[in-house]
Image (cartoon, rainbow, N blue to C red):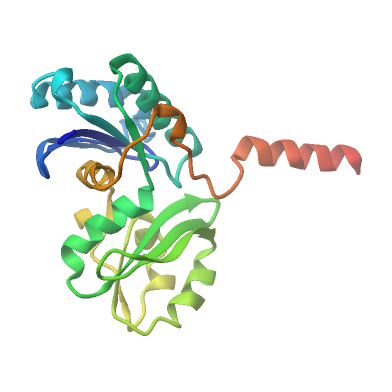
Amino acid sequence: MSTVLGFDTATDDVAVAVVHDGEPLYEAQLGVGEQGGPRHTTGLLGEVEGAVAAAGGWEAIGRIAVGVGPGSFTGIRVGIASAKALGLSRTLPVAGVCTLDALAAGIGEVAGERDRLAVNDARRGEIFVALYSAAGERLWEPLACRPEVLAERIATLERPTLCAGSGAVRFRQQLASRSVEIPDGSDPAHRVAARHVCALAAMGSGEGPGAVDPIYLRPPDAERWRERGTVKKAG
């Protein structure tokens, strides 16, 4: 299982990679399309095919890794469904990786001895966030909150911290402080790289497709609108 195919579609990007013994053989990161929307459904499988070809074919793949969120509800579903289908068709183990863990691994490449604060845009004026030590250990479990709530928690941090992710870029003014640095918006640390999804999955045992569970942290928009409609009718 030394060769891992990994991808993440929990953010606006489609991130795909294949890694052999820790070395990337193929890596791609597709941003939004011409219409401004994510290319989860149109770009993922094509990049997977390219990654598998770079590895030498499906017989070379030992495991599939997929980002399970938190992030876009639709994006998470696309990624997990694709990973399960590929795992079943190719009889390969599938491992789920927290998207914030993968983001933090990328932040760690430039953070040095600083802690890592992974912050992705959750829309609706909220963010998904988790804090990690310089060694990569989770210090805060993933949560969804408003940026002002995170700003209050940042004020309690005692160690220098590097903060990155789409949420850090969007809410830079609220989150930047004396102890927290946010790189320039074009810095690669703000985007999930699939090589980190592969690396984190390779550290685990890997399980069957049925064991890959999404991390949503909050109900999808459709459910929230249904609840609002129910409340209005009851009123």
